[in-house]
Image 1 (cartoon, rainbow, N blue to C red):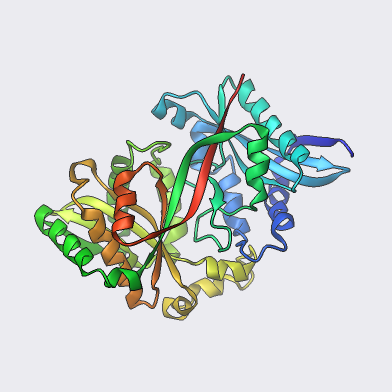
Image 2 (spheres, rainbow, N blue to C red):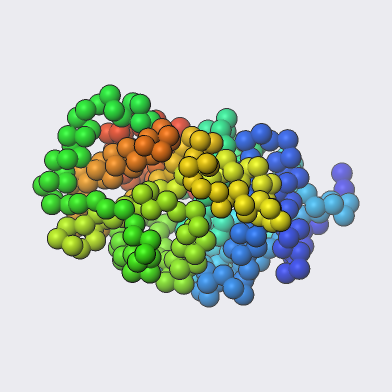
Length: 377
């Protein structure tokens, strides 16, 4: 068998780095091609604000001059500062089903991370927990929801055979409106929780988008701060994410929980536009962007799921059942638009409050994503 060569992917090879995924998934009916323009933005180390306090190197694995795999090695200074750790990350991993190729890629990432003075390698992170995060390990017979990862099942073996071990699982719950409405007690629980805390829910006001975004920043970085793996998003990162999502946002799906006029909770739910992205095959232009500019009432009949991307309540109001009020409102709103399934993802396996909320809604744990780690000697 020919030798495998691992080399740095140069800046002008980023499009090639992105498009290698099409080689891996060309016969996979569940894969959703990413928007090439979006991936270029994420991987742009000069313009992506994430890289103001992070470093990354991209690598190709080649055999006989042909690309057979790719990987990124990442040093995230904010993560290490927040969590008092000294670890690096690997991400954007794609490989043919060949253990030698996977070993060569992971070894190169580990070598780079070790050279940075770090003592463990964790991932997959694409490039952090605020983006696509984790390896799919359960739930392969379904396309991913919007902004969730997907990978071949054989990646589990490739990664574990290299010596990486589970450090944490991330849960994805499927919540059905049909099952929820059969349980009248759920609405009662939601109503009682709101009444006891004097909380009201309201949708996003698009006319005051900038002011609304400030409230999002407050809740996001306060509600999730205690969570494992969480890193706060800078204002620039949140502004960029908001800019990218704004054309797709349905204000009815963005909820603010308020008590006496103060924001104490926030949820962001997105219709599963992956149904549309799948048809676009990574290309926004020349005409695919028109599909996203259609009135949502024309797009929604194609969409079966809405993904609850973010649901957070500041610590002072947690453990009061208010998450049930958010869930119930989201599912009711989705049903009014002809969408009867929601995915709550991702939720840390040991985040009992959020997992309990999903179970209360009679949710099904239907996908699991895994974070792996390997100590560096």
